[in-house]
Image (cartoon, rainbow, N blue to C red):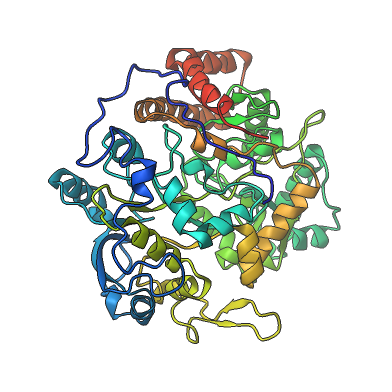
Length: 547
């Protein structure tokens, strides 16, 4: 097994400093231990009926029915899963029949809470479209079972894929007690950073300009884009820099890494190279970025609507192919082949003198996709059935549709090719499949990745080789083993921080920054318990085995 970055997730709830006091009183579930469901010994043996087979198929020799509560997206059809060939084939293979209860994500929270309140639980909960509160229903009430021992014993496919990675992609699923109450959902790749920078190569060529390599050169290039009519239409309609204030991929947040601030996409914090949790908004790089954007704003080098337009307006303008410089996830994934991809190339971000860009690193980490309830009387059978969903052909049939119309094996390399380019019509079951578990190494071995994923991989590799992707992923912040109470308190503080940062960003871009306004901005966070907030995350990170 390759070395894992996270060898274990410790039961750190009592070691992490709380912003608010003790957690709620733990409930007691019938036949469960306090706050933890069944014991490990009970979990690995309970419910194995006569005729159960620990390996091979069928899983059971006598018919068995399990109840599954299935969360689907609002856009997905309510087609009966048992009418689908892949499910019929799975039942014939395993000997296990499923009674499905399908719930759209808009109704998920209400109906899930009602089911738990009723005391009548499904055997299995499957959902990547709706959230299941593991801390409340697993750690506190014991209504969900910890699955660590069960997955190790009964899910060899799932376990093998985890062990094939340099890191454990399921590490972030550990609850505050160190246990995992879910089975992971993941479609992954290895190197990953979300922010990518693009510059219009056609405009550079039209104006006879070299690729800018410093921030000063980039600024001069943007001035040339504004004044030199690079699109050749005789009008001053070029947009040197296209972006908005707050959206993902196109917002100010994604310019910050050029100035050495690899801010988390959901929080205004990050982990530096010394494993220290840092607040982004009081960093010198943050100020430098906003000062540069103010310069662009004053000179008309950034879209004049930067402070008011939304993500849809930005994407429409970018699709028009009249932008010189922007950030984006990737090009072909946005369908920009004609208007953008043919003109723009990946840009190596420039930084102010004495500084270095630092892009946020993202791990390919799983999210909870499947859960087993404490009243499930057929645990071995359940776990083997979940593992059967992950066998290669079954998994791709659930995601793309049946072999033939949905996917096929490539005769040259033996890997799977997707036949359909638009999967919206094939995702009638499980949305995007609640148990699609394909981490980087595995998916590269069995699947011929679509061009958009190849494109992203290449982008990330270029930045990785340049040494500008941060050492420690901010995903560790999401893995932090916080109690439910700590998590809720942090969310409240994060909302206040986010509102304040966005307000001041707009002011700094439009009005500029003085020493007085900057000091007022930085000191404002003292009243938000920012130090206590950072300590909660720092204590949690310190408990994690980050290499």
